[in-house]
Amino acid sequence: MSHSNFLVDVAKILTDNQIKTDADSLMNWGKDWTKHFTPNATAILFPKTTEEVAQIVKLANAHHVCLVPSGGRTGLSAGAVASNGEVVISLDKMNAIGVFYEADRMVEVEAGVVTKALQDFAESKNLYYAVDFASSGSSQIGGNIGTNAGGIKVIRYGMTRNQILGLTVVTGKGDILELNGGMLKNATGYDFRHLFIAAEGTLGIVTKALIRLEKQPVNLTAMVLGVPDFDSVVRLLDRFGGALSLTAFEFFDSVAIDKVLSAGHAKEPFESRTPFYVLLEFEAISDGVLDTAMSVFEACMQDGLIEDGVMSQSVSQLQELWKLRESISETISAFTPYKNDVSVLITHLGDFIHDIQAVVKDSYPDFEICWFGHIGDGNLHLNILKPDDLSKEDFFAKCQTVNQYVFEAVKKYKGSISAEHGVGMTKKPYLDYTRSSVEIEYMKAIKAVFDPNAIMNRGKIFDV
Image (cartoon, rainbow, N blue to C red):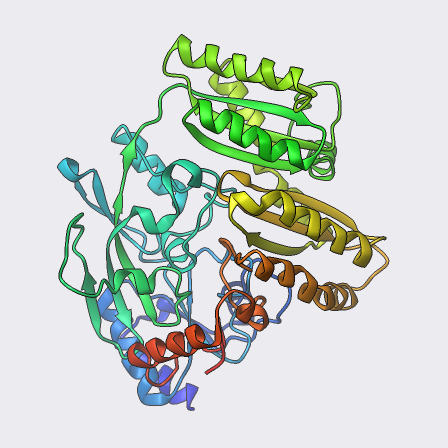
């Protein structure tokens, strides 16, 4: 492996401002939002075209240099961390929004486009980019694709995968592939597009995407409900989901709301405090829909499923209520949380969370636990908050010893150890709780086809 010779050859392709090797840059672009691994990148490269990416990948193969693709670096599984001297390929300079196909409600974007920029573009066309989450102001489309990002609208619109009509990728060999071309119907064999979605850059680098845009939702209305227990949360999903076409169904606990309110990131939704909270959203396209929502609310109050509640009456109130949920990740980041992002079928949610709560109570009696998640799609976020008197290393070590029990519960219900954050390095040791050994061998075989020299994001998802 010769990084110096590699960089000499790269300098023949890129200009000086497309190559960074200073310490601050290596630290900034060599990490993501995780704190488990120390960044140790050799260089950061900023290609501007797909062709430049392909040339870099071919040179990396020739010099046996490993590459780490990098987007907005908002990941939570260390999928974009360069900790072993890798060269980082940042897509920051590939951030153009290209051709808009009006008749197809589709737009071509480069991988470095920030999620919020695409949302704003869609709105300018009276359309809607449906993938939404707290880091939309800094996450990039390439990273969304690499992890098959989900967020708060999955119950209605699905994951990132559901929005991708075509991809341009550079494989681990340096070949440029244009996949699917934006077509809704294309029955011509293997669809490699779906292999690159959620591959976390282990097969190659996504450089462009053709994105499906949705119709703008009408008169979005939110309700925040105070709930006595988790069983009631699940029953509310059944009640409201059966009566309304929901665009979101989120939950969080009293620890989460206490942290958000104490930090001043949101306002009290109502006077009382309850163990759990639900935030649900729907399109109030008529007075009849609002009447239905209120009828369900009143019936659930009578049945003891709801202790208090509020409904938004304006766009500004809708935004205020959403701050209760969307501010959680940012707020608890100050407490160095250990995060588990798991999912099971909605059918199993009640039993699953009872099992997990038993594990947490036995294993973390002195730790503060913060629950929130996208209950509408079976996704739970378990966050263990670090005590002030415990070092980061000791805290992570203690949390990791209990992962086995958490993931055994996931396996029991045939769920996923990573619902939307990806595997990266933090969840890599636990992949076999969700994927069988035979599946993992097939995954490794697929990687060997697209990346025969194992230079693309080596050490992420699994070891090769």
